[in-house]
Image 1 (tube, rainbow, N blue to C red):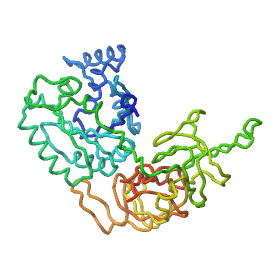
Image 2 (cartoon, rainbow, N blue to C red):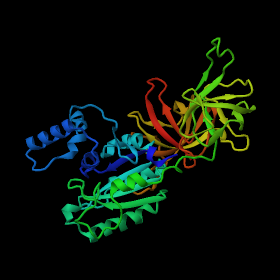
Image 3 (tube, rainbow, N blue to C red):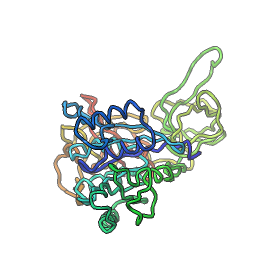
Image 4 (cartoon, rainbow, N blue to C red):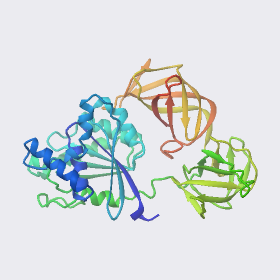
Length: 417
C-alpha cells in the first residue's frame, strides 16, 4: 500500500483554550487547504473583533456559535490533504463533560495530538485524554507543547514538560510518543520550521503527520471477515450467484484460501474476491469486498469467515472496559442490545467490577452504578456467542457498543479485555 495514498485519521485533544482550533486552522491555512473566500471571511471576522492578526481558530469556530445556541455537538471533522497524504481531523471538545465525544472522535484514529499549554503544563485534561487515547488503542501520540511564544521560546520550560509527560506516560500502553514545541498562533513548527527555536532538532508537526508509519497499525495476521450482507441477484445472468459482502476486520484473504465459517464450523475455500465488481488477487483490512466460496453453505449476516487454524474466541461472557455515554446510569442486571461487528443480540450486565479515576488511573471498587462520561470495567453475558479478539490485538473485532432497547440510543462504547 503506497504511503502517498494513505489516509491518516487523527484526533486533537487538550484542555479548553489550549489552542486546538487555532492549530487546526494553522494546518489548513499553511498547507493551503482552505478557499480564498473562507480566508476572507476569517480576516473580516478577526478585524471586527479588533485583532491585529488573523484568528485562524475561526476556521473551525462555526462549532462554538452552535454550542452557544445550545445545540449538542459531537465531533467536528475536518478534511485536508498534501501531496503525500490525506488527513481526517476529529476536533474533540476539551471539557470534562464531553469525554464521550472524545471517545467517539478517537475510536477510529491512528494518531492523537495532545495539546499542552506551555504556561500551564500538564493539566487534569492532559491525563484524561492521554488515558483515553491509550485505552482506545491509538498507536501514536504527538504531544504538542503550544504557546511557546508566550514563554519566550524557552527550551528549559519545554524540557520540563517533556520530562513530566514521559514520567506519566510510562503508565500508559502507547508505544510511540513524540514531542513538538509549537506556536499555533504564530505558525512555529506547525508546517514550517521555527526560526525562534533553533535548539529544537526534531521535525515539524506536518512532517511528522505525513511520515508516521501506519501501514502496520492494522492487524494483518488474524483473518476476520464479518458477513454484512448476502448477495443473491437471481438474474438470468447470475442465476446461482451467492456472494458475501462485508468489511475485512483483520488478516489477508486470497482466492483459494481454506476458510471456516462461524458459528456453523463448516469449511470451504474462497472462489473469488471482488472489489467494485472486479476480481482482485487479495484483500486485507479495512477493504470492503464481496467474497464467493466454492461450497454452498448457509451463511447469514453476523456470521464470520476465518481461517481454520486461526480463530477468534467464541464466548458469551465478555470482560469489557466501557465509556458510559448516557444520562441514564448503568446498573447491574440491566439489559441492552450488544452490537459487535455485524452481529446484534441481547445482553445483560452481570457485574460492575470497578470504575477508573481517569486522573490518577486508580480503581474505584464497589460501585453500584456508572454515570455519564465514567469509564468502568464490567462483565456482560450475551444471549448468543460472539466471535471476538482482545481489543489490543484487533480494534475491529475487540470493540462493542451497547444500545438501549427502548430508545435505540447508543449508551456505551466498549473495549473487550
